[in-house]
Image 1 (cartoon, rainbow, N blue to C red):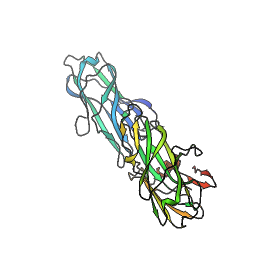
Image 2: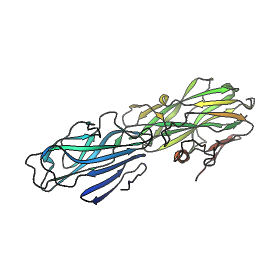
Image 3: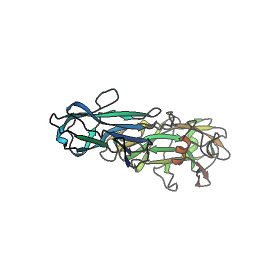
Image 4: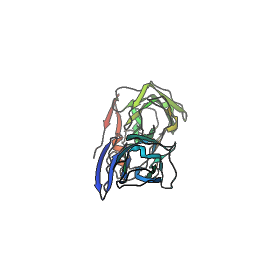
Length: 360
């Protein structure tokens, strides 16, 4: 059976094979749901299995809030013939509260903390069981099909730095900070971004006019100029919250001007602690605690990088990967993901910014 997977979209297809319907549904990025309803008649009894659904998540992992379950009764049966329905995991442990279904649309709410994927990805299979009334008609059939789950609000972060920036350069890009809501169930507002810069053979006193800029609008700024102190975390407050729609990502650039007296060969280590970001849910203002982005092999993507001071700026090292895209070592779609995240060489030229993007 071929599984369908779509990014940030919902699609469905239903096939009937040997009396069992396979309904395939794709939810948010990195999530695939496969529904397998029972399409044979059932008799009365307790805890009768009426179908399964399988949720496959990628290595980033997603939190599950709820999943729609559509009930179709036939063969003389009605939804009233069912009671005390429950969803169980592969260990036969209930993952939410029992419910009494109605014909058509139902919503099953997961217990807090139920996730899909994570680590190196994974698949969880759930079984829907109900009590079937003693007077149910002969030939009764109950078909549950699933839709795309509602996910928890989530924000993931990673940082990429160029190999070097130019001594004396104006508005050098010191880092690209990717803010990723592709695994979120709701829109997110970002009000502040914490950045720590440590100088090695160079001093943060030699950096000026440090600001965050959206790479889609490099001529504008998201923040006001902020003074830096070596090793101190500075929380860049955005002039207006950056709103990130569920299923999308954006990248902001940290830019600073580098004093002409900054020693060549010195370096700056730029880092971001995801948990320090000021992120809230657009829907209700609830605080969201961001985490680091994860590659397809389950390894965390970088949250810091080292930038050398040189006579000319240098794009990130390819490491044998895609030109101008660093080799993450994660393999597979890690470099492709970096491209999607707009990982590219951003190099300061004079008083402006030059952007070079790489595509396959």
